[in-house]
Image (tube, rainbow, N blue to C red):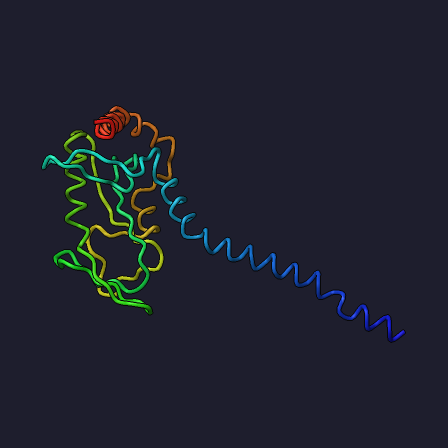
Length: 193
């Protein structure tokens, strides 16, 4: 009888190890996808159509790249996405913003002036549609000294631009559609030109 216990005492370890390994792989996969899913979910929640990586003409004979242009029930929304981790020190009037995290400290130019240029460029094309812009900081960024004017988080973005009544929003969207198509054509002419 002792031989029976010796061979079966550890027989459960192999299936348990396999289950643990599968759970660990699933958990790593969920964590890796979580950030992207949050962004995609928020964009789907507030937009009825979107263009990623839009290039349009700027006022000074150049071109402007827009991360995301969204058609919302409030008009057009330009999103400049920043994926930084750590504490962000930035303000409306500061030229450079600083990020401090466990690994390093670095600065980047205040993104708001460039966003104002993007808003102006889109407004030049679609003059009768409201155009807004936000700098979207994904999870992992924290503004401890106050949040600058055009900065938003995913939660704030959904609450500001979300439309709980999708049927009522469709009426507004239909009014914006011709202007949305004009933006698409302008983007295509820049790409082909």
